[in-house]
Length: 109
Image 1: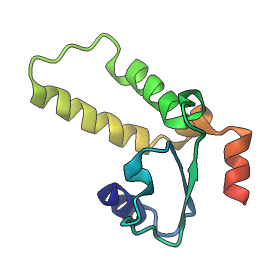
Image 2: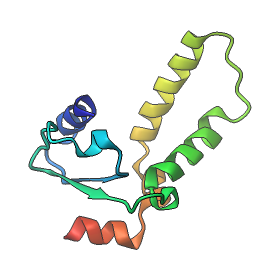
Image 3: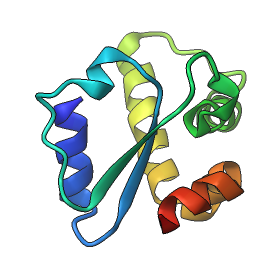
C-alpha cells in the first residue's frame, strides 16, 4: 500500500487526492505515511457497490479485455500495462465512471 501511495504522490504532487477505501487492515495501518495532499475516506463495511474502483474494473475489463486471449503471461502483462496507461491518460472516461455526488462532497470537505 505504501508503494502505491508513494507512486500516486509522485505522479500527482500538485493535486488534492481523495482515496476511497474499504476497511481492509492494510488501508488503516498506522505505519502508512500519508502525504499532506491526500485524504482517505472509508466505505461502510460490506458495501462494494459504493466502491468506485469496482466500477472502474468493470469498465476496464469490458474495454480492454473483452474476448481477449493471451498465449502467455508476458503477453497478458504487456497488454495490462498498456491498458492501465491508456486508462490513466483518459481522465474523462474515469470521471464519467466514478464521479458521484458523495465523492464530490468528499472532495469539497
